[in-house]
Amino acid sequence: MKHTDADSGSEQEFSFGTAQSDVDVTTADRLRDFYREFIYKPGLVAWEDRRTRIGSVILAVYVFIGTVGAWLYRAPSTNQSARGLRPFVTVEAPLGTTRSGEDVLAMAIHATPEMLVMILSGGIFATGLAVLIGTVAGYKGGTTDRVLTTFSDVTMSIPGLPLIMVLAVVISPERAVVIGILITINYWAGLARSIRSQVLTIREHAYVEASRTMGVSTPRILLKDVIPNIMPYVLVNFANAARYVVFASVGLYYLGILPTSVDNWGIQLNNAYSQEGALSGGDTMYQLVVPMLAIMFLALGLILLAQGMDRVFNPRVRTRLAGESESTTDDDTAAPTEVMT
Image 1 (cartoon, helix red, strand yellow):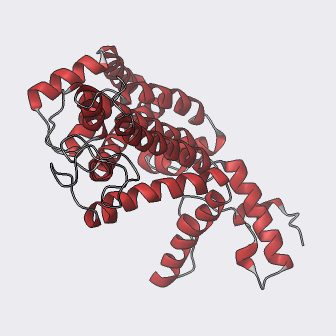
Image 2 (cartoon, rainbow, N blue to C red):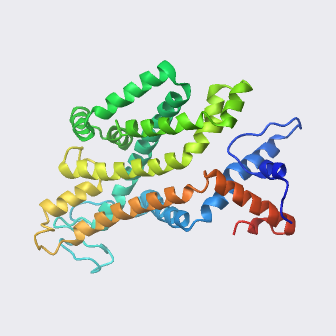
Image 3 (spheres, rainbow, N blue to C red):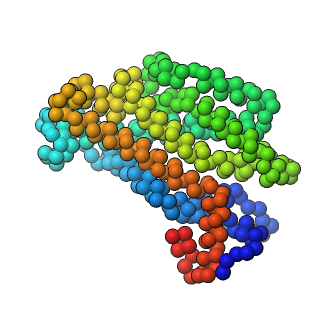
C-alpha cells in the first residue's frame, strides 16, 4: 500500500531534529528513537551507496592498521632485518628493507596512527570553526556578519604555507593533534565564507521564518534548520580538509620542516629519495611506492565516503527513501529491515 496522504508522509520522514510530544515516553523509548533516527536510518541510506561502502572499507582498513596493526607489527628500527632486501623475498620483511635494515612495511604501518590523529584534529578544527563562523555570520547579519567576515577575509589574505612553515619552526610541534591544527590554521576561512553564502539563502526559507516567528532560539534554529541543510557541503569539505592535512603534512615532513621524531610517510619518501636513490636507478623504487600508495588510498577513501554520505543529509533522498520504507512496511510488515536493500 502506497501513501497518498501528504501530511502522513511528512510525519514519517526521518530527520536530525528532535520531536516534541505530549505523550510521556520512557528513557528506553528515547534511546530507541535516537538509535532509529540518528544511526539506523541514516546508516541504511548511506550504506545503500556503493561509494560509501568502498570508502568505509578503505578507512576501516586504515583505522585497523593504525590501531591493531601498529600494536601487533614490530616497530621500525635499524638492523632489524638484512639490509637492502627487495620486496617479497622474505616474510620477515615482506615489502623489503632499507640500506640500514629498516622494515619498509613497518615504517608505513607505524606512520598511520599519527596521520589519523592529524586528519581528525585538522579536519575537525577547520570544518568546526568554519561552520561556527559561517553560520553565525550568515544568519545573524549586521555588525556580527561584518566583524566575522572581515576576520575571515584577513585570515584568508595570509599565505597559508609560509605561515605554517614559520609557526612550525617557532613552535616545533611534536604532537600529532597540534600539527593537524597547525596545518589548517587558516584553511577554515574560505570554507566559512562559502558556508555564510549558503546560510544567507537558507535563512530566508519559510520554515526558518516560521521558527523565528514562534520564538525559537537562534542556536536551536541553527542546529535544527540551518546546519542539517549544509551538512553535505560540510562533509565534502571535511574530506577535503583531511586530504589537505595528509598532503601538507607529508610535504612538510618531506622538506624537513616538521620534527622527524615521529614516523611519517613524508620522512619515508625523503629517505627513499635522498638516501636510497630511488629516482636514480638504484632498484629502490619500492621504497617510494609503498608510502605513495598509502597516501593515495587514504585520500581515495575520504573522497568516496564524503560523496556517499551526501545521501544521508540530502532532504530529497531522505524523503524518497522514507516514503519507500513506509510503503514497503505497509505491504510487508514481517520484513521491515529489507525495505532499504
